[in-house]
Image (cartoon, rainbow, N blue to C red; front, side):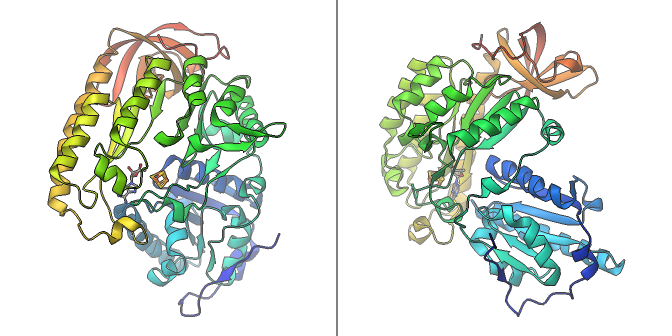
Length: 482
Ligand code: 5AD
Ligand code: SF4
């Protein structure tokens, strides 16, 4: 299918195209990702789609012929980062040109979607602007960019996943034993602070058959853990393997049977889509790790209503109770926003009270950042920056104390660790506990890719340290956490 491309406006002042680059096949591509895990997945798939064009992946800027910035628009700071990075890339481009060499710059991801042609006006060195739904068209965009800047921020009718191809076993292996897999994209929830429904579009779920096949490919190449991704992953409602509609619970049950796969996770979820069947699967399915990221954002009913979250603080607490009844050892994490417009100190205290009531294993917390085009940005009653900063610091102290307490409580216990790589020191290997903590042990390299029982002996600031107890049969599934 011919892409619907918009060639950049004539006021974009670009250097003359260099036909030598257009004719030459490939080169080296560096994809730099910002923001969420879906961007990490997308970055890998961008490299996959460019591989048949002769582009080899590199992590070295010095050797890259094409740099793709896979951007994040969720908060102002994340967006600003892109333009400072582009300034640096422009200098490299000028230096390369002076040596008679070509260097192309692409902006992908959510900033590309939100700002489109504006990016070319702000930074003229950019050659390609491509949105999150169009990156399967990168090969053609790279070719067209030889004649001038191109933009593709369409929401195309074709499914990008059908055009991404299958990465080789070798490429999969190089990316490690834990992989991301997008099963759902977009969001229909329209929380009043959030740009995602605008940048990623309406909710869509991939067909189960395609997800199963991608999972089998990954597992055959040695992947042992898959994190199913979606902006609203627990709202998954894709076409089932032989028709009908599957929920995320059904999909997890099916994927747990894929040979070689030891662990499954999913992220990110909305409390209102935490259905009973999904909660049940947390109790029934040992491959589903006992860790759940379930953002609540605030503990104040008034603020939750203003955020358009469509649930109250008590609903969340009841839900947590239900989940813990199904899987008592489950660890929870959440996102919080402080300083949403109109947030009073009582509202903020209610957030701290919710945090104390739940007890999170880990937490992400942000100052509210007004995003253009979202309803929150229009609210008059914005909270002053210094108040946001003070609340962020207080919330941070509380959740960091909870994180430390959670980690310390594991000392003396035995947990199953999936080893992912060599450790920090020679002779060490590192992997993840069921609760997503990094664990370092003295052990042989051949355990990378295997699940083993580890006794936790020490708790550092970012990692746990453990003693290898016994290797668990590879491919037997992670079993229950000890
Ligand atoms: N300001 C601050 N934080 C935000 N998030 C989303 N939008 C904003 C915003 N405008 C946070 C939410 C979300 C996480 C991915 O980012 O907590 O869950
Ligand atoms: Fe954004 Fe998540 Fe709300 Fe959707 S559910 S609008 S992605 S915060």
